[in-house]
Image (cartoon, rainbow, N blue to C red; front, side, top):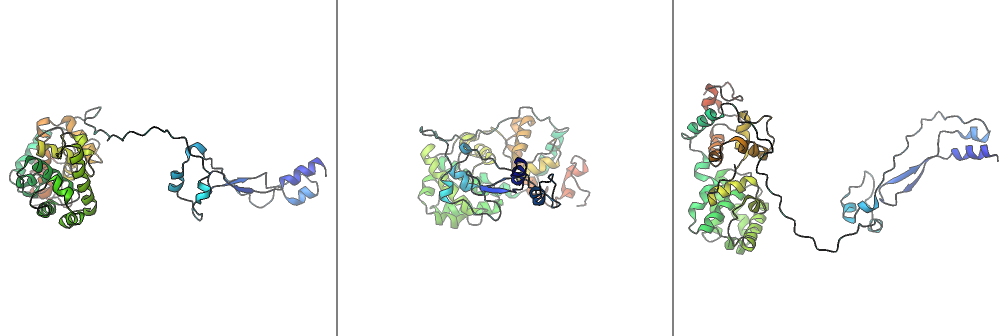
Length: 352
């Protein structure tokens, strides 16, 4: 056979496949120009293309050996209609070298306190703020009688007062004030009449769950309460921490709870506690340009221009306003003086 015929015969070969040595669910394809017809090769004619459409050449998937670990292999989802790699196959993957030195415990990420570029103060914000404050003085909202700051008043020991405030805030997430207040009372009764760190640690988990089962995510909060109580005893002398970062290191505690805890438990004004009411209302008022997407964005914007002496009161004021007037759905714009003053860009043209 001539060299030309040998070359043409070789070019008849279509796709060949083989399993990747790095990942069992990846198939590697190799092709040597499958478009040559067999007749042309056998007759010694010039190569011609077959009328059959050529299949696209498969793309090789490159997997770096030193970047894949056994844990990553398990976490990878196999492609459709393929089986996950067996233990024998996954054990062939080379594991990267690991340091023999023990890892230091991961430090909690510090909570951002300010913006690099302050948000400008909205035009006529003070007039709007004072108008809302005037309306709030005539409103009795659920937060006024059943808010998280009320839990401390049924305790006598200072540590228990602070702990009751923290517990109430932890239970309040995704829960109405009425339900939270009842859950705190039930939990206090289940612990023998007082909310204390030791009482929660020594309490049966089922008893805690039964007491708070009406709040949102009560199963998870039961675990958070037990873990938090143990951390307070081990790391903070069974007391509530006095910094935002330390509070946010506790399970289930975020910036909003941390700032509000410091306000009520320690009388420390270090930032604004922004919940859904503050986030919603300040965006309806057009105080954020562009509108903020999260309560944390709202907090940083507000803290950059709102006077510090108002940081503590704005949450309580807007929460009550949002519970009674500026509702999430169907806001009562007819009861709001901002509509008549044309101070709210989101006001609807409705009657009382």
